[in-house]
Image (cartoon, rainbow, N blue to C red; front, top):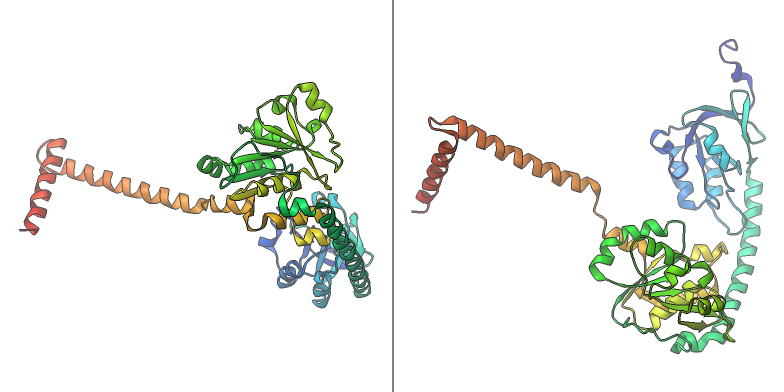
Length: 394
């Protein structure tokens, strides 16, 4: 047998690589015993359960199963299912193999195609998973104690702003009772603006742009009503578009970019606060002036972001979003409401086409079926049908 399968004597675990990363198609072809390739830092219980149900022999993670920032149970679930875990093989690994290729995992975490090692990671065992979990629990508690301590300090310094809107600039635009679209820079904010076109067309909302998102809005044909942020991040043409410009400022009134505004001869207002996030200030601006609904594009913050101590998930960000309350809606929610399933549209088109074809066939049969000309046959058939229907009601 060794003459025909030279790899059979090599140590380690053998299986088929399946690309289960976002955008990969390995899940559709997955069979029990395959190797699942994923890109999931701090893998959750839900993600782990999906993998457990597939019954993989191994899971190869581009990232770390646990980074140590949060105590996640995902690795424990996979280990309980006797799945071999290899982590931190690197982003380049996904492009180094084709879905469906046979591979071998060495006991040390090496990934081999034949006798060639294409990546190397670290094997995660029970002891390592438990150690990281315990350490992450302590770190999370320390982080949250500091986080809420900072939140308390922010409330102490900015209580008048959060409660009564002290320091919020006058809008100059009637925002009360209207919908607002707030656009912050993010990797996909241009795409989301395009998907919101029907919502914008229907409601004509007030548009608030944060930093360089103002340029994006102008490029796709929307003039913002407000630009909140550092003028250095916005083109001169956009700053001159007629939007009201608001500069985030320190509590003492010092504002970045004030010189640029003065050089351009543009009027601007400052918004002093103990946060340097233009998005947070834009939310407080819309909330104070009575916006009926605030659709946020980009810069979303949730509890997982706070736990993971992600950039932007600050106490000020949490408090500004809590201040907006139920009026704050993520753009994805609105996009989902305005998106009809493509399959439904196609079904309606096919149904309409079938009806038109059926009508055309009937017309041809009737027109050619009589002794007179095509048009006269249609007229005679219609008259006979009308007389028949009339007779039913006598």
